[in-house]
Length: 452
Image 1 (tube, rainbow, N blue to C red):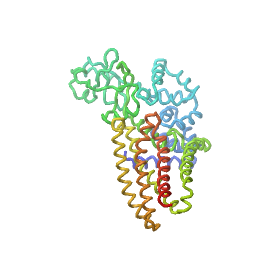
Image 2: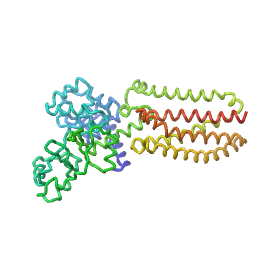
Image 3: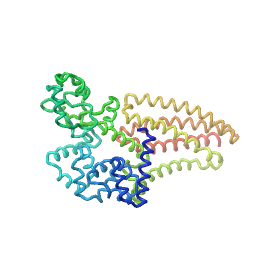
Image 4: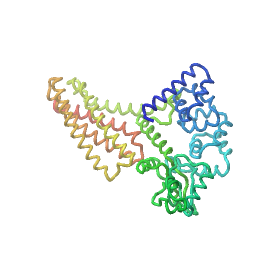
């Protein structure tokens, strides 16, 4: 569905829900909510205030509660769990697929987690406990435990009869996993081959043995990249010994991409993608205060640099008018480089092997743009204040700052990544500090040397 159509669809659903809530007809709300998909209900719930969420939640039948909970951000889901009847929740988990069950278990607080676990059959409980032990943001933590394996020494007719008797297959699966007697991965049998090849052929004759499984320790970001590069719809997850542990399908990867996009966007301003936009004012203010405090420190640092040249500014008032231009241009140029490098790191396109080349390229861009825009601002400032000397100083400071901005934009995310710090979280603040300090220092310093 095109993005614009999707947005209009979601907007229409939200507007209709709000109108029904304002009308006060709970029965109409119930009928409407029951007519849409669980994921669409989750989107509506996240877009409403807490009291309105409770009204929506009160009309949700137990058999779809869990499906909605796993689509919600953790903070929103946690709030709804507090008003959910324990028996309803336990009933809601009965028909959940294993991957959705794992997502839900990650959300449940104690003692509710223990109560849900106690309601699960012992064999299934053991499988889920094992899956919960995998590190977060790895293939093992997002895989489904509901997968289908076949043997390579049977015919395609046997496989077809087995599937027909089974009566169902996992959704979004394009291949069947082929294993040996000890559950070691042997290859993949495409559903297309199963349907088009002669039935008397053995699985081993038509399967693809060149395909590789995904190690359970692989990071989820690398899993998403692998799916994109190889146009995969599903892939088996393997233990260190090559045994099948689970399966990842394209819907898992879509969730990874969505979460990473939210993380990248929110972390730039110090927020968590799981935060509820309708959280209480006190809670939200407390979270944002830390980030504001960090920015205040950097602002005072830039102000301190300006203060060093107070005497120069007092004598040449035009400097106060022009100096924000240098810092602003440096900030924009640096942000362009920073965004490019952070994206490259996320996509595994930037590493030690090519970091030097990227730095050289960005420095070259900084030099070219610095000279280009230095000429422009020199002319404008010279005509504005009737002083070509002032214009030349502004242009020189801009060249210095754009080159430094390119250097900082390339090196800061690389250094943060080396230290295990998310570049998207801290990169922007550090870059702004660098471009402000160097911009003010260069412009006011040159003015002090050559104009006084």
